[in-house]
Length: 447
Image (cartoon, rainbow, N blue to C red; front, side):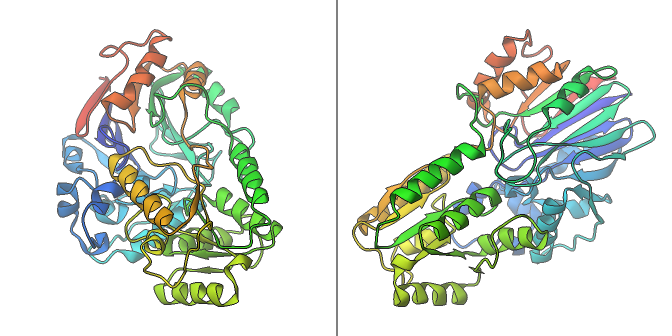
Protein backbone atom coordinates (compact mmCIF):
# COMPACT_ATOMS: atom_id res chain seq x y z
CA UNK A 1 0.00 0.00 0.00
CA UNK A 2 1.27 3.46 -0.91
CA UNK A 3 1.12 5.79 2.09
CA UNK A 4 1.79 9.52 2.22
CA UNK A 5 1.37 12.10 4.96
CA UNK A 6 0.58 15.72 4.12
CA UNK A 7 1.64 18.04 6.94
CA UNK A 8 -0.92 20.70 6.10
CA UNK A 9 -0.88 22.90 9.22
CA UNK A 10 0.60 23.06 12.71
CA UNK A 11 4.13 22.02 11.73
CA UNK A 12 5.73 25.43 12.19
CA UNK A 13 3.76 26.66 15.20
CA UNK A 14 1.46 25.79 18.08
CA UNK A 15 -1.95 25.99 16.43
CA UNK A 16 -4.01 25.49 13.23
CA UNK A 17 -3.47 21.73 13.18
CA UNK A 18 -4.28 19.72 10.04
CA UNK A 19 -2.74 16.49 8.80
CA UNK A 20 -3.83 14.22 5.94
CA UNK A 21 -2.88 10.55 5.51
CA UNK A 22 -3.27 8.99 2.06
CA UNK A 23 -3.46 5.20 1.85
CA UNK A 24 -3.68 4.29 -1.86
CA UNK A 25 -6.76 6.27 -2.92
CA UNK A 26 -8.26 6.77 0.57
CA UNK A 27 -7.46 9.93 2.57
CA UNK A 28 -8.20 10.59 6.23
CA UNK A 29 -7.84 14.16 7.53
CA UNK A 30 -6.96 14.68 11.19
CA UNK A 31 -7.98 18.06 12.67
CA UNK A 32 -8.79 21.41 11.04
CA UNK A 33 -7.69 24.04 13.51
CA UNK A 34 -7.43 27.77 14.07
CA UNK A 35 -4.39 29.78 15.14
CA UNK A 36 -6.26 32.13 17.44
CA UNK A 37 -3.27 34.42 18.04
CA UNK A 38 -3.29 35.35 14.34
CA UNK A 39 -6.87 36.52 14.79
CA UNK A 40 -6.31 38.34 18.08
CA UNK A 41 -3.65 40.66 16.67
CA UNK A 42 -6.38 42.21 14.49
CA UNK A 43 -9.05 44.39 16.11
CA UNK A 44 -12.70 43.31 15.96
CA UNK A 45 -12.18 40.42 13.54
CA UNK A 46 -15.26 38.22 13.21
CA UNK A 47 -14.05 34.97 11.68
CA UNK A 48 -17.63 33.75 11.15
CA UNK A 49 -18.14 36.28 8.37
CA UNK A 50 -14.72 35.93 6.72
CA UNK A 51 -13.77 33.95 3.63
CA UNK A 52 -11.38 31.02 4.08
CA UNK A 53 -8.86 32.55 1.65
CA UNK A 54 -8.60 35.69 3.78
CA UNK A 55 -8.07 33.59 6.91
CA UNK A 56 -5.41 31.54 5.11
CA UNK A 57 -3.62 34.75 4.11
CA UNK A 58 -3.73 35.86 7.76
CA UNK A 59 -2.14 32.56 8.83
CA UNK A 60 -5.23 31.85 10.93
CA UNK A 61 -6.27 28.53 9.32
CA UNK A 62 -4.36 25.85 7.40
CA UNK A 63 -3.52 26.43 3.75
CA UNK A 64 -5.01 23.21 2.42
CA UNK A 65 -4.01 23.69 -1.24
CA UNK A 66 -1.47 20.87 -0.79
CA UNK A 67 -4.44 18.50 -0.62
CA UNK A 68 -4.78 18.79 -4.41
CA UNK A 69 -1.41 17.00 -4.71
CA UNK A 70 -2.76 13.88 -2.98
CA UNK A 71 -4.13 11.36 -5.47
CA UNK A 72 -7.19 10.14 -3.61
CA UNK A 73 -10.52 11.03 -2.02
CA UNK A 74 -11.08 12.17 1.55
CA UNK A 75 -13.19 9.55 3.32
CA UNK A 76 -13.23 11.01 6.85
CA UNK A 77 -12.43 14.21 8.75
CA UNK A 78 -11.39 13.35 12.31
CA UNK A 79 -10.97 16.07 14.95
CA UNK A 80 -9.21 14.61 17.97
CA UNK A 81 -10.77 16.90 20.61
CA UNK A 82 -12.68 20.14 21.01
CA UNK A 83 -10.00 22.82 21.23
CA UNK A 84 -10.18 25.55 18.61
CA UNK A 85 -6.66 24.85 17.34
CA UNK A 86 -8.09 21.47 16.24
CA UNK A 87 -11.70 22.27 15.21
CA UNK A 88 -11.76 26.03 14.57
CA UNK A 89 -11.19 25.78 10.78
CA UNK A 90 -13.84 23.12 10.15
CA UNK A 91 -16.53 25.69 9.22
CA UNK A 92 -14.11 27.25 6.71
CA UNK A 93 -12.56 24.18 5.07
CA UNK A 94 -14.66 21.05 5.63
CA UNK A 95 -17.22 21.90 2.94
CA UNK A 96 -14.51 21.32 0.32
CA UNK A 97 -14.49 17.59 1.12
CA UNK A 98 -17.41 15.21 0.66
CA UNK A 99 -16.68 13.21 3.81
CA UNK A 100 -18.23 12.65 7.23
CA UNK A 101 -16.81 14.29 10.34
CA UNK A 102 -16.11 11.56 12.89
CA UNK A 103 -15.41 12.37 16.55
CA UNK A 104 -16.30 11.58 20.15
CA UNK A 105 -19.65 12.87 21.54
CA UNK A 106 -18.37 16.05 23.25
CA UNK A 107 -16.19 16.98 20.27
CA UNK A 108 -19.02 16.41 17.79
CA UNK A 109 -21.32 18.74 19.71
CA UNK A 110 -18.67 21.46 19.73
CA UNK A 111 -18.17 20.98 15.98
CA UNK A 112 -21.93 21.25 15.53
CA UNK A 113 -21.89 24.59 17.38
CA UNK A 114 -18.98 25.84 15.26
CA UNK A 115 -20.85 25.00 12.06
CA UNK A 116 -24.06 26.61 13.34
CA UNK A 117 -22.21 29.89 14.01
CA UNK A 118 -20.70 30.02 10.51
CA UNK A 119 -22.08 32.84 8.33
CA UNK A 120 -20.01 32.43 5.14
CA UNK A 121 -20.13 28.75 4.14
CA UNK A 122 -22.73 26.01 4.29
CA UNK A 123 -21.12 22.94 5.88
CA UNK A 124 -23.62 20.15 5.25
CA UNK A 125 -21.59 17.08 6.20
CA UNK A 126 -22.62 14.01 8.15
CA UNK A 127 -21.54 14.19 11.81
CA UNK A 128 -20.75 10.71 13.13
CA UNK A 129 -20.18 9.87 16.78
CA UNK A 130 -17.51 7.31 17.62
CA UNK A 131 -16.41 6.54 21.17
CA UNK A 132 -12.93 5.77 22.44
CA UNK A 133 -12.19 2.06 22.21
CA UNK A 134 -14.27 1.67 19.04
CA UNK A 135 -13.21 1.01 15.45
CA UNK A 136 -14.65 1.78 12.02
CA UNK A 137 -13.73 0.71 8.49
CA UNK A 138 -12.07 3.38 6.38
CA UNK A 139 -11.75 0.99 3.44
CA UNK A 140 -11.55 -2.77 2.79
CA UNK A 141 -7.94 -2.73 4.00
CA UNK A 142 -7.88 0.03 6.64
CA UNK A 143 -9.52 0.25 10.07
CA UNK A 144 -9.56 3.37 12.24
CA UNK A 145 -9.48 3.05 16.02
CA UNK A 146 -9.98 5.67 18.74
CA UNK A 147 -7.64 5.22 21.74
CA UNK A 148 -8.62 7.09 24.89
CA UNK A 149 -6.15 9.77 26.01
CA UNK A 150 -6.18 12.47 28.69
CA UNK A 151 -5.89 16.14 27.85
CA UNK A 152 -7.08 19.51 29.16
CA UNK A 153 -10.56 18.85 27.83
CA UNK A 154 -12.78 15.79 28.01
CA UNK A 155 -13.42 13.12 25.37
CA UNK A 156 -9.97 13.41 23.75
CA UNK A 157 -8.64 10.54 21.64
CA UNK A 158 -5.64 9.55 19.55
CA UNK A 159 -6.85 7.98 16.29
CA UNK A 160 -4.97 5.00 14.89
CA UNK A 161 -5.11 3.83 11.27
CA UNK A 162 -4.48 0.10 10.96
CA UNK A 163 -3.04 -0.49 7.48
CA UNK A 164 -1.40 -3.51 5.81
CA UNK A 165 1.95 -1.69 6.25
CA UNK A 166 1.49 -1.19 10.00
CA UNK A 167 -0.33 1.29 12.23
CA UNK A 168 -0.25 5.06 11.85
CA UNK A 169 -0.78 6.74 15.22
CA UNK A 170 -1.82 10.39 15.28
CA UNK A 171 -0.63 11.50 18.72
CA UNK A 172 -2.02 15.04 19.15
CA UNK A 173 -2.80 16.14 22.01
CA UNK A 174 -2.34 14.34 25.35
CA UNK A 175 -0.63 13.87 28.68
CA UNK A 176 -0.09 10.59 30.54
CA UNK A 177 -2.70 11.07 33.26
CA UNK A 178 -3.45 7.97 35.30
CA UNK A 179 -5.57 9.84 37.88
CA UNK A 180 -7.79 12.26 35.94
CA UNK A 181 -10.52 14.28 37.64
CA UNK A 182 -13.08 13.46 34.94
CA UNK A 183 -13.12 10.55 32.50
CA UNK A 184 -10.92 7.48 32.18
CA UNK A 185 -7.11 7.33 32.44
CA UNK A 186 -5.01 7.24 29.30
CA UNK A 187 -5.11 3.78 27.74
CA UNK A 188 -1.40 2.97 27.81
CA UNK A 189 -2.18 -0.76 27.74
CA UNK A 190 -3.74 -0.35 24.29
CA UNK A 191 -0.82 1.74 23.02
CA UNK A 192 1.60 -0.99 24.09
CA UNK A 193 -0.55 -3.61 22.34
CA UNK A 194 -0.61 -1.57 19.12
CA UNK A 195 3.17 -1.29 19.24
CA UNK A 196 3.48 -5.06 19.24
CA UNK A 197 0.60 -6.21 17.02
CA UNK A 198 1.21 -7.39 13.46
CA UNK A 199 3.75 -5.15 11.76
CA UNK A 200 3.75 -2.73 14.68
CA UNK A 201 3.61 1.05 14.22
CA UNK A 202 4.70 2.33 10.81
CA UNK A 203 4.55 6.00 11.81
CA UNK A 204 3.88 8.06 14.92
CA UNK A 205 2.85 11.72 14.54
CA UNK A 206 3.45 13.43 17.88
CA UNK A 207 2.49 16.64 19.69
CA UNK A 208 5.69 18.39 20.80
CA UNK A 209 4.25 21.44 22.58
CA UNK A 210 6.22 20.82 25.79
CA UNK A 211 9.00 18.65 24.34
CA UNK A 212 11.70 21.04 25.58
CA UNK A 213 10.56 20.70 29.19
CA UNK A 214 12.26 18.15 31.44
CA UNK A 215 10.43 15.59 33.56
CA UNK A 216 6.82 14.46 33.22
CA UNK A 217 3.55 16.36 33.12
CA UNK A 218 1.63 15.97 36.41
CA UNK A 219 -1.91 14.63 36.62
CA UNK A 220 -4.95 16.90 36.68
CA UNK A 221 -5.48 15.63 40.23
CA UNK A 222 -2.31 17.56 41.17
CA UNK A 223 -3.77 20.82 39.84
CA UNK A 224 -7.01 20.06 41.67
CA UNK A 225 -5.16 19.69 44.98
CA UNK A 226 -3.21 22.92 44.44
CA UNK A 227 -6.39 24.77 43.50
CA UNK A 228 -8.15 23.37 46.57
CA UNK A 229 -5.29 24.44 48.82
CA UNK A 230 -5.23 27.94 47.31
CA UNK A 231 -8.96 28.50 47.66
CA UNK A 232 -9.07 27.15 51.22
CA UNK A 233 -6.29 29.57 52.13
CA UNK A 234 -8.58 32.39 50.99
CA UNK A 235 -11.70 31.11 52.74
CA UNK A 236 -11.72 33.93 55.31
CA UNK A 237 -11.11 36.74 52.82
CA UNK A 238 -14.19 38.99 52.85
CA UNK A 239 -13.65 40.78 49.56
CA UNK A 240 -13.89 40.06 45.88
CA UNK A 241 -12.53 36.89 44.32
CA UNK A 242 -12.51 36.07 40.59
CA UNK A 243 -11.24 32.93 38.84
CA UNK A 244 -10.42 32.20 35.23
CA UNK A 245 -9.47 29.05 33.34
CA UNK A 246 -9.84 27.42 29.94
CA UNK A 247 -13.59 27.24 29.27
CA UNK A 248 -13.03 23.88 27.55
CA UNK A 249 -11.27 22.48 30.64
CA UNK A 250 -14.38 20.87 32.09
CA UNK A 251 -12.49 19.07 34.87
CA UNK A 252 -10.95 22.35 36.09
CA UNK A 253 -14.27 24.18 35.85
CA UNK A 254 -15.84 21.37 37.87
CA UNK A 255 -13.20 21.79 40.60
CA UNK A 256 -13.73 25.56 40.72
CA UNK A 257 -17.48 25.09 41.06
CA UNK A 258 -17.06 22.57 43.85
CA UNK A 259 -14.46 24.53 45.84
CA UNK A 260 -16.40 27.79 45.54
CA UNK A 261 -19.31 26.14 47.34
CA UNK A 262 -16.94 24.71 49.93
CA UNK A 263 -15.64 28.16 50.93
CA UNK A 264 -19.14 29.64 51.01
CA UNK A 265 -19.22 31.46 47.69
CA UNK A 266 -21.81 31.14 44.95
CA UNK A 267 -20.07 30.26 41.66
CA UNK A 268 -21.29 31.87 38.44
CA UNK A 269 -19.84 31.04 35.01
CA UNK A 270 -19.59 34.16 32.85
CA UNK A 271 -18.59 34.42 29.19
CA UNK A 272 -19.77 33.01 25.90
CA UNK A 273 -17.29 30.13 25.79
CA UNK A 274 -17.93 29.25 29.45
CA UNK A 275 -21.61 28.87 28.67
CA UNK A 276 -20.92 26.94 25.45
CA UNK A 277 -18.49 24.34 26.77
CA UNK A 278 -20.07 23.73 30.16
CA UNK A 279 -23.57 23.78 28.67
CA UNK A 280 -22.53 21.15 26.14
CA UNK A 281 -21.02 19.00 28.89
CA UNK A 282 -24.16 19.18 31.03
CA UNK A 283 -26.32 18.26 28.02
CA UNK A 284 -24.18 15.13 27.62
CA UNK A 285 -24.67 14.23 31.31
CA UNK A 286 -21.04 14.78 32.27
CA UNK A 287 -20.64 14.45 36.05
CA UNK A 288 -20.77 18.12 37.13
CA UNK A 289 -22.25 19.94 40.13
CA UNK A 290 -26.02 20.51 39.96
CA UNK A 291 -27.78 23.74 38.98
CA UNK A 292 -24.81 25.52 37.41
CA UNK A 293 -25.50 29.20 36.86
CA UNK A 294 -23.95 30.42 33.61
CA UNK A 295 -24.41 33.38 31.28
CA UNK A 296 -22.85 34.02 27.89
CA UNK A 297 -24.60 37.07 26.42
CA UNK A 298 -23.32 40.55 27.21
CA UNK A 299 -26.55 41.82 28.77
CA UNK A 300 -26.92 38.76 31.03
CA UNK A 301 -23.27 39.04 32.06
CA UNK A 302 -23.69 42.72 32.95
CA UNK A 303 -26.80 41.94 34.99
CA UNK A 304 -24.94 39.16 36.85
CA UNK A 305 -22.02 41.45 37.69
CA UNK A 306 -24.44 44.12 38.88
CA UNK A 307 -26.14 41.56 41.16
CA UNK A 308 -22.75 40.46 42.52
CA UNK A 309 -21.89 44.07 43.43
CA UNK A 310 -25.32 44.73 44.94
CA UNK A 311 -25.45 41.53 47.02
CA UNK A 312 -21.82 41.69 48.10
CA UNK A 313 -18.96 40.34 46.04
CA UNK A 314 -17.64 38.47 49.08
CA UNK A 315 -20.53 36.03 48.53
CA UNK A 316 -19.64 35.06 44.95
CA UNK A 317 -16.96 33.52 42.77
CA UNK A 318 -17.32 34.70 39.16
CA UNK A 319 -15.55 32.17 36.91
CA UNK A 320 -14.83 34.14 33.77
CA UNK A 321 -13.20 34.00 30.35
CA UNK A 322 -9.88 35.71 29.72
CA UNK A 323 -7.17 33.39 31.04
CA UNK A 324 -4.86 34.30 28.12
CA UNK A 325 -5.57 38.02 28.42
CA UNK A 326 -7.65 38.02 25.23
CA UNK A 327 -8.51 41.69 24.54
CA UNK A 328 -12.27 41.18 24.26
CA UNK A 329 -12.64 38.53 26.99
CA UNK A 330 -14.49 39.36 30.18
CA UNK A 331 -11.57 39.40 32.61
CA UNK A 332 -9.63 41.80 30.38
CA UNK A 333 -12.64 44.11 30.19
CA UNK A 334 -12.96 43.92 33.97
CA UNK A 335 -9.29 44.89 34.25
CA UNK A 336 -9.85 47.87 31.96
CA UNK A 337 -12.78 49.01 34.11
CA UNK A 338 -15.30 48.43 31.31
CA UNK A 339 -17.77 46.49 33.47
CA UNK A 340 -19.67 47.36 36.64
CA UNK A 341 -17.52 45.01 38.71
CA UNK A 342 -15.18 47.07 40.89
CA UNK A 343 -11.91 45.71 42.26
CA UNK A 344 -10.75 46.85 45.67
CA UNK A 345 -7.17 46.71 46.92
CA UNK A 346 -6.45 43.12 47.96
CA UNK A 347 -9.13 41.43 45.87
CA UNK A 348 -8.01 38.06 44.52
CA UNK A 349 -7.76 36.88 40.90
CA UNK A 350 -6.98 33.19 40.36
CA UNK A 351 -5.46 32.24 37.01
CA UNK A 352 -6.00 28.47 36.88
CA UNK A 353 -4.36 28.31 33.47
CA UNK A 354 -0.88 28.47 31.98
CA UNK A 355 0.07 30.74 29.12
CA UNK A 356 -0.07 29.09 25.70
CA UNK A 357 3.57 29.37 24.50
CA UNK A 358 3.12 31.98 21.78
CA UNK A 359 4.23 35.67 21.80
CA UNK A 360 0.75 37.16 21.29
CA UNK A 361 -0.68 35.22 24.24
CA UNK A 362 2.29 36.07 26.44
CA UNK A 363 1.90 39.78 25.68
CA UNK A 364 -1.86 39.78 26.19
CA UNK A 365 -1.60 37.90 29.48
CA UNK A 366 1.07 40.31 30.76
CA UNK A 367 -1.09 43.30 29.89
CA UNK A 368 -4.16 41.76 31.54
CA UNK A 369 -2.31 41.07 34.78
CA UNK A 370 -0.85 44.59 34.83
CA UNK A 371 -4.32 46.12 34.40
CA UNK A 372 -5.68 44.02 37.26
CA UNK A 373 -2.76 44.91 39.53
CA UNK A 374 -3.25 48.61 38.78
CA UNK A 375 -6.72 48.23 40.28
CA UNK A 376 -5.24 46.64 43.40
CA UNK A 377 -5.88 42.98 42.61
CA UNK A 378 -3.61 40.26 43.96
CA UNK A 379 -2.75 37.62 41.34
CA UNK A 380 -2.63 33.89 42.06
CA UNK A 381 -0.86 32.66 38.95
CA UNK A 382 -0.53 29.41 36.97
CA UNK A 383 -2.47 27.05 39.24
CA UNK A 384 -2.42 24.57 36.43
CA UNK A 385 -0.94 21.47 34.85
CA UNK A 386 -0.43 21.27 31.11
CA UNK A 387 -2.37 19.00 28.80
CA UNK A 388 0.79 18.12 26.87
CA UNK A 389 3.65 15.67 27.37
CA UNK A 390 7.05 16.68 28.65
CA UNK A 391 10.22 14.77 27.81
CA UNK A 392 9.66 11.73 30.03
CA UNK A 393 6.15 11.32 28.68
CA UNK A 394 7.55 11.32 25.15
CA UNK A 395 10.10 8.72 26.21
CA UNK A 396 7.32 6.50 27.57
CA UNK A 397 5.26 6.79 24.38
CA UNK A 398 8.23 5.88 22.18
CA UNK A 399 8.95 2.94 24.47
CA UNK A 400 5.33 1.78 24.21
CA UNK A 401 4.80 2.22 20.46
CA UNK A 402 8.29 1.51 19.07
CA UNK A 403 7.40 3.24 15.76
CA UNK A 404 9.42 2.74 12.61
CA UNK A 405 9.15 6.43 11.66
CA UNK A 406 8.40 9.67 13.50
CA UNK A 407 6.78 12.96 12.46
CA UNK A 408 7.05 15.63 15.21
CA UNK A 409 4.29 18.29 15.13
CA UNK A 410 2.68 21.14 17.07
CA UNK A 411 5.82 23.30 17.46
CA UNK A 412 8.34 25.40 15.58
CA UNK A 413 11.84 24.09 14.90
CA UNK A 414 13.24 25.46 18.15
CA UNK A 415 10.42 23.83 20.08
CA UNK A 416 11.08 20.47 18.41
CA UNK A 417 14.70 20.26 19.60
CA UNK A 418 13.86 18.53 22.87
CA UNK A 419 11.87 15.89 21.02
CA UNK A 420 14.74 15.29 18.61
CA UNK A 421 17.05 14.69 21.55
CA UNK A 422 14.60 12.31 23.21
CA UNK A 423 14.12 10.37 19.98
CA UNK A 424 17.88 10.23 19.43
CA UNK A 425 18.12 8.17 22.62
CA UNK A 426 16.10 5.48 20.79
CA UNK A 427 18.32 5.65 17.70
CA UNK A 428 16.06 7.80 15.49
CA UNK A 429 17.84 10.22 13.16
CA UNK A 430 16.56 13.34 11.42
CA UNK A 431 16.38 12.76 7.67
CA UNK A 432 16.30 8.98 7.99
CA UNK A 433 13.37 7.87 10.14
CA UNK A 434 12.48 11.18 11.84
CA UNK A 435 10.85 13.73 9.53
CA UNK A 436 10.99 17.42 10.53
CA UNK A 437 8.35 18.77 8.21
CA UNK A 438 6.86 22.16 7.40
CA UNK A 439 3.35 23.27 6.54
CA UNK A 440 2.41 22.20 3.03
CA UNK A 441 4.89 19.31 2.73
CA UNK A 442 4.21 15.69 1.78
CA UNK A 443 6.14 12.79 3.36
CA UNK A 444 6.33 9.51 1.44
CA UNK A 445 6.20 6.65 3.94
CA UNK A 446 5.80 3.68 1.58
CA UNK A 447 5.60 3.29 -2.19
